[in-house]
Structures are given as structure tokens and as C-alpha cells.
Image (tube, rainbow, N blue to C red):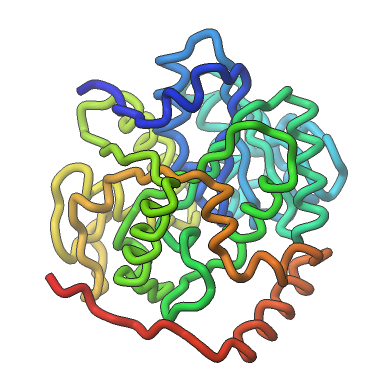
Length: 325
């Protein structure tokens, strides 16, 4: 198989403008690159766009040679070359990679790191601007399918905010894609609870299927190229998710570091990390117990505050359990 055997092609058949958006911030948009290149290969006539819930200060995004400002301080796109390098610029360096390596000027849309209400507004603006009729939220890891009632929910907050925002826009197709099962060691994600949540989504008929990256896929090679490009910029931060997905695709197993550095003993690379899992995003949102308390938040501080209040008053928490095999 030279390209991803996507199980979501039926859902995307009638879509003409598809947005692939990183759900949890950071390097999640990179985890969407294999989908981006696969869809461009399969659907030459469709438009495919990239966006990310961004941890980059949007006021600094003028460090690229061109910036499209759709909503000042809330939604912009980086294009072209990075002018003032910094140690954390995932989106601007991705735009530079497209220009330098592929000879393309691809805007990387950046959503402000904010609360549910302004984020929903930003999604609405981008949907209208690009004529979006399908959204694929991408999570590097699986904490986006956590519900908030379990131990080991990871960094659920940002994913929930993105799900709320997508739920608030008038787009007929809304899909959540997760990749990197087992990578979220630092976040202490409980994968027993993640699998239980997946089983509940299967029961709800919200699971669309799964597929795996392989080294032979051109979409995988472009993804690896983009990741290595930004990681190897001077002193730039690396993604602990994709630095595990990529060697797992090549067949590395157990404790392994892609750059030959010190390994974390708890890390166990496996073929599970190469799998994409696809879900109906709105069913995932319906199962998310944080959504109701976050839906009226106006900024990130507000979102953090109401999340902390929710955690303090939640009486029933599913305990952490180890996988039995």
C-alpha cells in the first residue's frame, strides 16, 4: 500500500474544501500531515487546508515573511520564511518547510490559545473564508477521547476546546483523528481508560475505522521530512509524540530515542503508535463531560479555572488500571 487506506473517504466524498486542524496545540498539525498529503493525492480537485490550535504567540507570527490576518490576535496564517528564529515556532517553520522543501506557499492557519467562545468565532471566520465543508480535527495521542471522569485524562483541556469550537460551526462533516496510541507518557494518559472510551464510541456507532502509516508511503515520508526539518532548527523544541510515532513506523520497539539520546524507561514504542483512529467528532464531544463547563469560557485562564473547579467537585473518577496483556 503506497498511500493511507483511509476509512473516511465515504464521509469526505462530497466535500470540496477540507480543513485539517490540530486539536491540542503544539505539533498536532504535523500529526495531520499524512492525512493532508493523502487527501491531496486522492482528491486533486478538492481544496485541503491546514490549521492548528496554536501555542505560538500570534503577535510574534510576523516573524514570517508573509502573514495573513483574518482576525487580529485570534486567527492568522503564517506563510513563507521565518525571519526571526525562536525555539518554539511549529507553524511558521512548517510554512517555511513547504516553501523551501516543496516549493509551495501553504498558509498554516493559527488559532489563538484561548477559550471556547472566541475559538468558536475564529473557526466560524475560517470556515466562511475558505468555504470549509469538512473538518478533520487531529490529535497527536488519544487524550481527545477522554471524558474527564477518569484518572489519566492527559491534556484534555485544549482538545475539548477545539471540539466545542468545531461543534459550534455549521459544517456537515466533523471527524476526529487520533494517532500515537501509547506516546503520551509524560501526560500519564491511562490507556486502559482510553480503550474503554473507544469501546463506548464503537457502541455509539461513532467509530469510522483505523489505518496505519508505513515507511513506503510518500505521505509518511513528507511528514517525517517536515518534522525533522523543524526539530533540527537551532535549539528548537521537539514533539515527544511524533518523535515516537516516526521510529515506531520504522519498526522500532520498546525504549528508543529517534536522535539517540537518553530514553525514558516508561516509553514503549510499538506498532500501535502508527495507527490512525477515526471517530465522529460530535459523538466524542457529546461524551466529553468537560464540554458543558467550558463552553462559555472567554479566554485560556478562564478555561483553566473552570476545569480546576470541575476536577475538585467530581466525585466519581474511574481509577487508573493497567492493560491486562
